[in-house]
Image 1 (cartoon, helix red, strand yellow):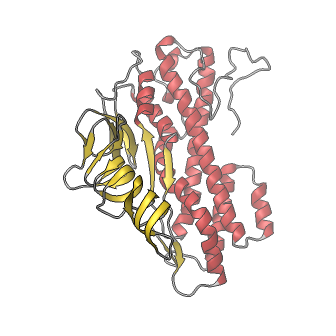
Image 2 (image 1 turned 180 degrees about the vertical axis):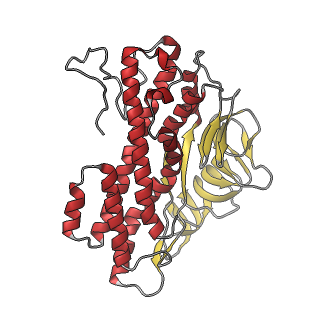
Image 3 (image 1 turned 30 degrees about the vertical axis):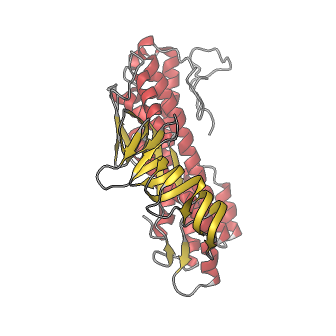
Length: 398
């Protein structure tokens, strides 16, 4: 995506030329020439515009490429391929390619219920420290204590860093990255061995089934532990006993810590609250944190129901490669960005900063560029979700 500037002449030192704002860049050291009282808030706005717009553009590209691959793999006519490739408007191009992907899936006999698609499991993790550091810039004090003002992970699971032992709340299982004495499911690396039901990277003392899974003791890394066994090495997954670290290290978990814990990240939900700051600045923090969230999709199976034609086989082959990319963009990352995009559609200068009167000449020029980037990012997100959603809808995944 090109850098958006406003009112720039040939002289880069011109006061009305904003060269400091760049999409996809770290703007922590940029000087936008605004009043000192809003310097932190403006920096947050600029970073939000940079992060959100870059992620939105990446999402648009990912969905466009996935839809194009599906359409081409399933025999799209060369004339239509050439016409779509010539489209210069990215929001129109993604719609063209995803419409063509749906058409080719339909022609191949693929519709909702045609394929047996294991429900995709996906998650995004938003950093608590990133949110706190951002909120600190929103306040004139430049501080935000997450322990004194802990954020909430609404609709998801908050993970903590615990210097002691983590245990479950009630009988529920919890996530553990440490040593677990009663595993539910997850991976375990233990040189002394662990009872295994998955792949063993090391030595499997037992039998190996037709799928290559170790049925016995695995000395090394087991991809799937037998439920209820203890992992005395390094475990990562769901635990329903106790979870603790080895030596002086700290454990990462979502259970109850027996000492003071530090919130780390919100998994599968919305990171809300924290330090009390200006509403607009906090919204910009949310945009930046969501844009930088780490998202992934777990592997899932795609098989045919009933007789398998050559067309269905081809559809399954391309979907195994490209559907996870669509799920990641449309479902995992798209849900959070879609909510944020609503607030930035048609964003104007006065809507994205708390006090436009303190911007100054350069700050005003940059604010216009930032607002345009936010609005452009919102348009890209909307176009991406609408286009990609047609393909996932065709497969019965909406």
